[in-house]
Length: 254
Ligand code: 13P
View 1 (cartoon, rainbow, N blue to C red):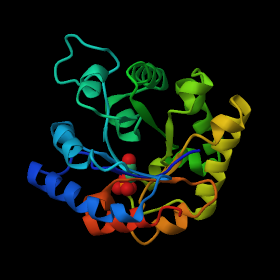
View 2: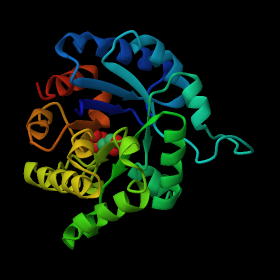
View 3: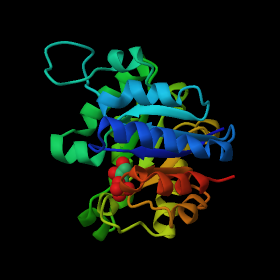
């Protein structure tokens, strides 16, 4: 059965000291968690080992990288590979975040390559999808997101698909303070799960956690997470404030 997940995407924030304090503070809410829950901290590369060391003795916490390269090794100055992440105990990797798609020209095809590499190394992808504002305004968000899933994920067999976490992050809601409504989130998440059932089966579809991302805050998380098809959140800004992210963790379904 799928997990309910609170995932923090720290993006390019925090000094080493801030990262250490934040990770240590977040462990304080671990008593509210049980086997159905997971807290994932997607931290900048330089802090992966440190944060992994801080949280790894707690069974409900994991670290994630925010990206990885699509080749295994080689002359790619400044890049980080799947085998490197595997060798330091990283369990998850965010792939296809809209900031990487927009700022680094990542395509569905490139993200597919990264998905395959993550699978090869046993790192679970947190696959991000979501439409820009103009697509939402045209009412074409369902087709847009379906195409992202089709081109980057649906070549996987069921056993591999079960290892994927999907994060629906409408681009117009990221860092804007404009959250998708409960109805908008529920509709998209329901559609994604329905496609998983069609493409695979109920068993696979019920194993994949589908997170919502985009201006999740301490005061709206619980309502979003209470949508029947929403299994938690991928959180940017609010994950940098321990008290706020703790509240978001507490908002996970019980
Ligand atoms: P915000 O929570 O800051 O809107 O960011 C969402 C996001 O991009 C998480 O990956």
